[in-house]
Length: 251
Image 1 (cartoon, rainbow, N blue to C red):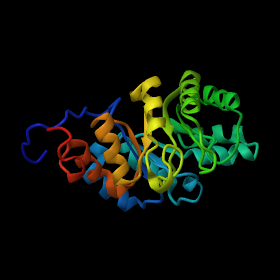
Image 2: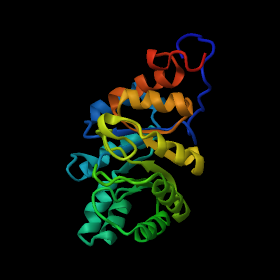
Image 3: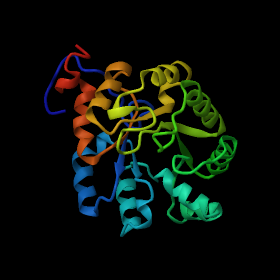
Image 4: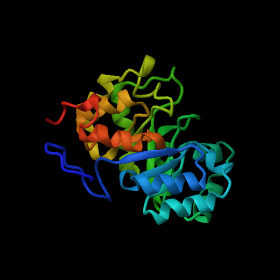
């Protein structure tokens, strides 16, 4: 850091098991990534290439190499898995992971219906090849899981072989663990943290108010995801209590 400040929360050094920041890349160019990594690489733990943007991204291999050179794991968004699956191309999905030397991937069912036991089978199969991050929750605002369902699905997916489970919110931060207007569904969060290890959960929190809520409730080293590239440094200031939204949290 550039100067000394007392009474700051302890942040683990990378590679972290807790306090992860998962950044969403929705189409950054190569020069933008170079600049981002020059300023912020120490605060980025894993990068998701949002939904199926990897299919239409120019110079995809070069983009992946930039992140890997910075020792930041990168993976394709879970919607890409569903895009392959609904076309009966699961084997092609595995070949695609191999073609691009992917070490991580996301398995989700947010856009299509997959029986949960079948989803867990896919997690188990894919986890033999790469590190699986699975996502729980629907992108349909009308499909609302009960607290017990959140816990049951997360526990089952971790048992099937997921490294981490993501609590769905979309990039809009308006579904899944959030209600109308991005309101945090407290009863869902309480049930999950009571029954699922915190270090296994990545909470999607694209908005500052949501990020601050989780930091205040669960601490500086909560795992947060769907963070925009412009919010990487601002999020770190929230984690450290040096922004007004968390100013008194760690004093």
